[in-house]
Length: 203
Image 1 (cartoon, rainbow, N blue to C red):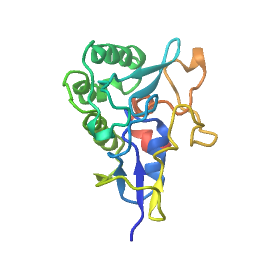
Image 2: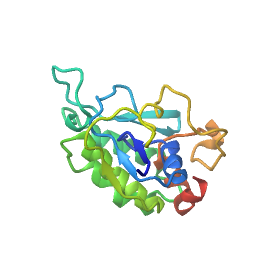
Image 3: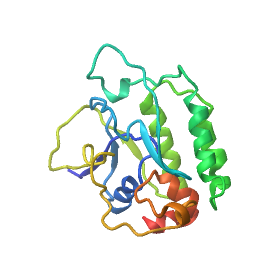
């Protein structure tokens, strides 16, 4: 049986997420049956702003149950977080070398209303893979399985409160690096908007 690369569905995932994809040729499978994890990259992306790093957090609808499968998590639109996220992204990256090149592709995620977080994250992932020119097909898990020998399992390892999976990441130019220094393993859009077509080579 061919091994599978098993990843969580993250919001604008960190650079390390795509480094893993680049380094592993196993079929890419996104977990949809895990219980939703709070304070994780599933709803959180980290970008570089003029004042340091900034977390963008997608609000979700909170039901009565604590253990809800990822596929059933609904996005909340009680306040206009899409406008705030897009404004933050524009403010952070408007002067980057490649923001205008990708802008029209990404703005739809801040105008359209996706009902489910999984659909939102997977649609972004498809765009990001295309933008970086990583030719991978995404499939979703058919059920929840514990780790086994046929999985390269990163479901628990990519987390904002855990050490980055990038060992001694090499630096690239960031918009505010002259002021703040280099921030490693930010959202992949930081790499994409600053490095454009060179993003795949960096990975």
